[in-house]
Structure formats: structure tokens, C-alpha cells
Image 1 (cartoon, rainbow, N blue to C red):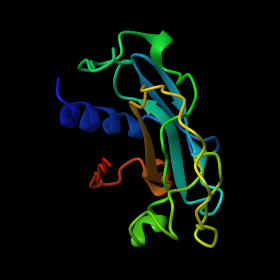
Image 2 (cartoon, rainbow, N blue to C red):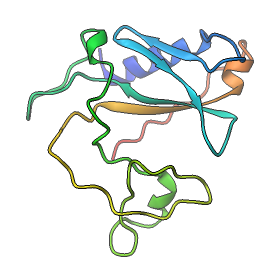
Image 3 (spheres, rainbow, N blue to C red):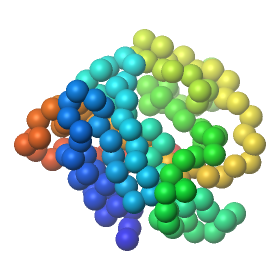
Image 4 (tube, rainbow, N blue to C red):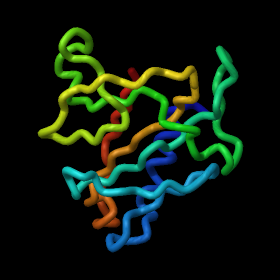
Length: 149
């Protein structure tokens, strides 16, 4: 199974939500992921740290998670970036930001990123989905953008 097939299949599960009253849940074979509304835009749900590959052996190829025990990251040690910060190339006066900081459209200044401790388990996705997808069960499929950096 390749990544494209996995993503398309996973996103098709979004239509099976618990309703508009509570945030939807994405159910994958290796664990459920509860959505939360974005702090600065309640019309968008965020599925945070969705695992898409098993923790790799150093320099080894990754594979799909084998079960529920792999669904939770050890820590969010992977560099996370607000895309608005990337309107200017990182470096100099625009360093990449702190992954523990809550960014919004009016708050995207960079902060010093914490020191990296050597954990290479960064096989997680943050998936942003418009709330309207869940509020309108018959809505059309949406395009998907996957951004690797």
C-alpha cells in the first residue's frame, strides 16, 4: 500500500463522523483520532498527530503501523511549522518556530525551536478538514494537499 492510497482511504473515513454536536473521530486500524476545532477558526477541524507509519529503525524504511499501540507519539519532537512563517525563507531573522506554541493568523512570529533530542519518529500528519464536510453528509469530495518538508 502506498502513501497516496493510504491518505485517500483514510480521508474517506471522514464522512463517518459522530455528528455536528461533537467533534468527529477518525478511526484507523491503529487507533482513533479525535478532531478539535482550530483556536482561530472554528469552521476547521484539526486531527493532530495522525500516525501514517511505524516508528522506523534508524536509517530503515518505515512501514504502516501494525496495531493500536503505535498510534500515540512519544513526544512531538518533530519540527512543526505554521505555513504562514514560510512566506519568507527560514533563517536569519525568520527562524523556524517553536512546535509547542499556538500560532494563529495574527500571531505567527517565530520563536527559537527547542533543541532536538535525537528522536526520529516523525511519521505523523496534522489533517485540517472544513467543518462543512461533517455538517453536510452529502458534500462532494474535497481536494487533498500533502506537504512534505
